[in-house]
Length: 152
Image (cartoon, rainbow, N blue to C red; front, side):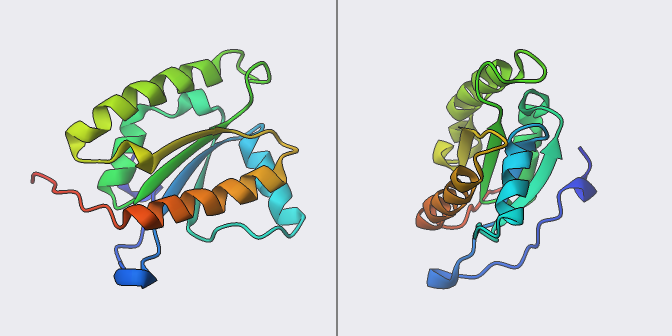
């Protein structure tokens, strides 16, 4: 993943005006379609999400998540197909195992594991996508800005 692949503004509001930057990796077949349906249905969704469309949630390498945090994301959402609906058979199982492992490792990077969220959203669950977008934004707002100390 190159730096240009995730465009995250470094502008940071402070205090109650804090607006988190959230990177959302969405599976093409289900979660992205659910987000698209939310838009077509004119449902309000959080403007804090920056969506990256992936062919499968199983293609989201843990290094992409760490890189998103390094580039200024305050939170990362991964959304994929429900179990049994994955177009790539077991991609969502792989994602689940990776996210569980990564949540154990994030504190080593100085990152609260609550800044990473995994959801299963089908193409018909526009309301669920909209609800989760606001829930996760509120959760990240309560945690405040991520202040990573990077070694140069």
